[in-house]
Amino acid sequence: MSQSSSRLAVLLAGAASLSLLTGCGGASDDAASDKSSGSASKVTVVASTNVYGDIVERIGGDRVDVTSIISDPDQDPHSYEASTRNQLALSKAKVVVENGGGYDDFIDRMLDSGNASVDVINAVEVSGHTAPAGEELNEHVWYDFPSVSKIADRIADALGKADPDNAATFTKNAAAFKEKVTALEDKEAALKSAHTGDGVAITEPVPVYLLEASGLVNKTPGEFSEAIEEGDDVSAKVLKATLDLFSGKKVKALVYNEQTSGAQTEKVKSAAEAAGVPVVPVTETLPEGKDYLTWMGDNVDALADALNK
Image 1 (spheres, rainbow, N blue to C red):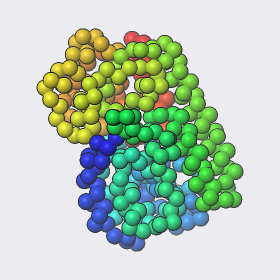
Image 2 (cartoon, rainbow, N blue to C red):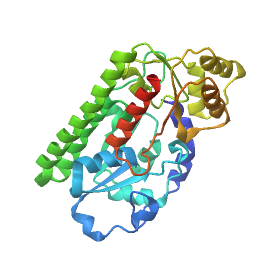
Image 3 (cartoon, helix red, strand yellow):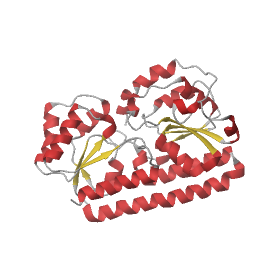
Image 4 (cartoon, helix red, strand yellow):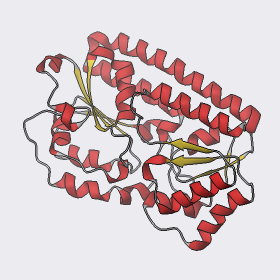
């Protein structure tokens, strides 16, 4: 959504002052300097978050050297401050995967400083999602499984162009990855069959694609989730309307973004718990120790468990 742009504004000031330095970039800044020069023959890839970094690794295998700029599951991606190591990694990348849609504009700002030949994959553009008439774009396309399959194909294509000798392997790996994504879609279809029309609440629009594919109806006032995503305070009237969803038993679950919690979202979470409404936590980046497929499978399973209570 365009709201994310304002919440990412802090990135732009940091990115504007960055210069191309010699050094090393990596999946995290500290890990960056530990990568050996032996990876030079691999396709160097930078992803804005470890969500896309993991997908690249599923497809590229040992033929890619991936840097994920945002990789801390406890960090709010909207307030991330870019570093000179990020700039360096981008300057050396053959392929860059960004989310787009205003979510990670700092990538484009840093790319403007150099490396014009890099192949940039914009996940929102690949997904084909646009803003509905009169509404904002939901840019969280990694929660939309059909979009993720499209992104996987685009990644395989980019890696194949960078490393033609292994293009067939990348295509094969993408096909295997997409089969597992299709299994996630099957789980959504099962939820839809059992729970079409059930109401749910959210704190932010992060999981909305998953909820819609599962046949669920988001009952949260738009003013609430939009304000939370933009980092604004929610009016007393809107907050009350949101809290009433739980006391009035109008929703069967609260899907709660753990990475951007605050006083008002905590109040909503407490209201859900007090009313006996299950809380389903979600995040914007990969939790430690999980890959994309495991993470999303766990999310769908947790939602199913909540709805079945």
